[in-house]
Length: 291
Image 1 (tube, rainbow, N blue to C red):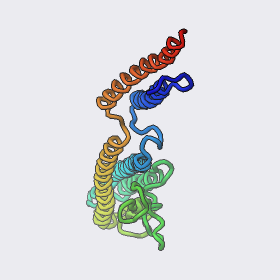
Image 2 (cartoon, rainbow, N blue to C red):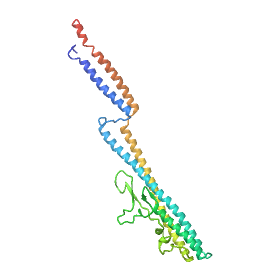
Image 3 (cartoon, rainbow, N blue to C red):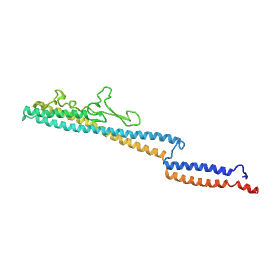
Image 4 (cartoon, rainbow, N blue to C red):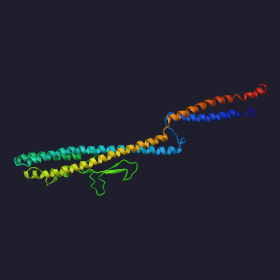
């Protein structure tokens, strides 16, 4: 190589190598400080696109878990109210059993019937007052009796909108006293009163039917709660594994990157040293010129 003074090719070469090494060192520092292998599209365009899709799905799945858990809480609220209604029906049957025997007077049966009707009114009050986040649960609002099936609650938990995969409906039958066929609200039905011995005797079967209806509602709710709990488990597993896949694409391997950082640091230091040496070489020309 000729000794020239207009162009210091050695210094230019060292500067170019320094720029490359310094850029790689800067990338290593960015990755180690952020913990991410991909900090911009420039790092890995395809990987960035896949990562962002995965991140969206992960967040949606986690929201689906929350949706399903909210539905479980709603069902537990309805089931808790039905357990109280169960206590009222048990007391009503106890009163009917008491009034069905012949050892009491008409006046005494009227007193029993007064408590009987109070229990029926309390059942209706519980059914109409029970709500979850403002949604009535036991007053028939979710009984699904509308022709178009709108009177049901859609529980959405999937990442799409497929009826086979992403949501299903919760149906809760009406649980007021009249719907169960007990109390004065049931009209002239068998369970409407226990004011007479014969009425009390027929009320026993009506209350059994009411209890069976209530138990059927609770059983359906229990099945839905179990289904939702299983859904939560599946969604959590999906989110966890998707997070693992996203991590492999996006997160930096600290051990590997630290090795790369050390390598780039040494190369940068060497390039700086060689650039300093290359910048002194043109001074040799001065010696030849007697400088």
